[in-house]
Amino acid sequence: MKCFMEDPEKIRLFHCIRDKIYYTDRIFLYIDTFFSNAKAYYFGSNAFGEQADGIVVDDTDTSIDIHYDSFGALTDYGYSTEMKIPLKNIKYKSGKNVKWGFFLKRMIEERKEEISATHVDRNGLNFYDNYGILIFEELPTNRNLKLIPSFLTDYTHDENKKTGSSTIKRKYEPELNIFYEPNSSLSTTMTINPDFSIIEADAMEIDVNKRFPMYYPEKRPFFIESTNPFNTPITIYHTRKVVDPIFSAKFSGAFSNNYLFGLGAIDENANGGRFIEGYEGSANAYFGFLTYDKKARSGNAYIRSALAIRKFKEYYNLVGDVDGVLHILKNLSGYVQLVGSADQTKDKTWHQGYGYFGKLSYDSENLFANINLKAISKNFKADIGFIPENDIQLLASHSKW
Image (cartoon, rainbow, N blue to C red):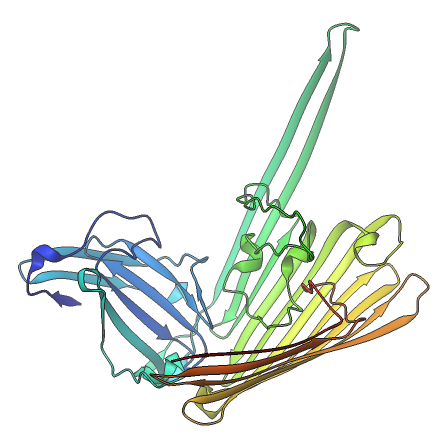
């Protein structure tokens, strides 16, 4: 990319750490490698060749780091930058006459200006409506296998000088991570006895007089890699509920306009009081989650279903979800989520609960308006989700000109 400036001395440039190039002049390339109109990689570079990358779904996720090469140089006309992205480091649709969506955007920081390589309709509801199209005569199938073992040991020597006694404690913790992609459309990941002790601590929150439990985002690499693929207003999938896994596996696949994601985990010595009121004792807890997503109308609509399961000894918690979005007119869209749960109590009776969320939005260049409806029944429970409050009915509206 050659980036021209009337006055090259006004280029905003200084050295940055990864993903923090946002106050420099920069270039971003977005590529939808499955032409799904729902998800895209993005790769950025400034004139120093420093990088910012991630995935865009509904929001921008910078938690992943993809290896690619980038170079930059100041020139007499402004600056130039170059990026080389290895196919082996991204997931994509393979075969003949493959279509990718792409979007190229340049940011001029001095004037807070954005320039794109394709026309942008300011009245559009879908970011992907502004795509250009890349067509590849043929793309090879991508196959990858990675085995990453690790071994942790802890040695403690306690000496009591009064009694002259001493004790030595040794602890050994092997770990194995497996990444396998049999083809470009399917990927699987497993972790055995993972240790997350190096993960950044949660920021402190003061909980005085708070009515609801506090929400903490996921930070563990295994659970967030490749973006959390399921996010809904009524949160039935929140991996922080898997506290200390001894085993976890997940898979994801994209086939034409069909998408699958699944996760399974064994939580070691989980406290039974987390799941069953009045239960004392601990045991391994088993979690499972599966979702299927069908795109329609060139990505402007989808319908999705999901199932979440928690098993603790002989007790179960089951949660089902159906949700979907439809762009009714150019500026009008709707979203609906329906959920239901079945949960066993200490006396092994089943309690059923339900919930729904609905949203209708109008969004144009000059006017934004929406209305939201949300209700959750008293007995609704999602043990692999985050439900801060139930037994509610809410109506909210917002407009802006």
